[in-house]
Length: 407
Image 1: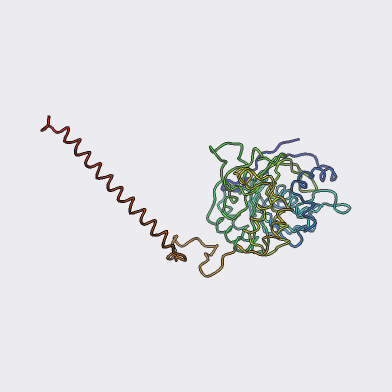
Image 2: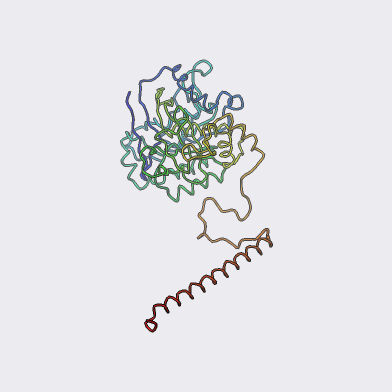
């Protein structure tokens, strides 16, 4: 069995959030048994009694998805390839990482009653494949990482997916530096009601920082659901980044998934955890299509299992996602809204105009508290003046005590 390494992608220093363990293709029935822990942890059997994701579409911004894999046939629409021109003419994409992620989100299995092969979290959801990265084994990898024309492919891919009408965008990719265009694309997606789910990154065991692992983008952008990975004990996996951007976690060790050509893979990483959470979001959006991204995120956190002491920590966020409990929380939140409206709402596609805002309108004025605060401020000022007077007097006395006229 060969152990892979983190796969670097994107000119800005991004990395696919997965470590792959290559192995000969597994038997389909062994594959499903290999998924047992994930199915139980996410409480999928209970969630599937409510919905299996029919009607929801998840954009997988990745290395491409094999639409012919027997566990994904009929569920994948191949969208735009933003890496076109990086590989030499006639070289097909490998689509390994993207197929793997798509299977965790929307794999429907195969065979009698679909009981063989990979079953995704939302097996009746659809996938839009948007190619924004190359596998590091592809011949155009170096060109893709250095050519300026590929710098904003993630931002362009997000906007494209939103305009194609998706409900969820899965971003099992990470990079160290953010760009203004990516930030604007994220705001644009959220303004259209699209939920973005991204990997927190796999640098957690490198100890680059004193108290936290590095931030990764697009996971660290405000409004994006940043996902960390847990091990089999539901503790932070050693590789998973920990910092205040992490919102929730999901299993990310020994995760079975599909590969191109009807193969199957086992791997670990925040990529896999992210795909699982995207599947849960697809279930929520299938049941509540108009639910806004903030409320979807709240449903994920409200329904989380294995919460850390105090309710939150930077390792696993608010806890490990449960599909069944997240759906129940979404049902409770369905009658509410978290969307600002009106003429004063900032256009999410544009930066603030120099940070200038109008005058602040005082809605409620508590005159009693104002008076008390003023009295306290006056007393403090008087005390400060008195202290200065005392200091001045003492200084004069000291000077006189050491004056040559008195010697």
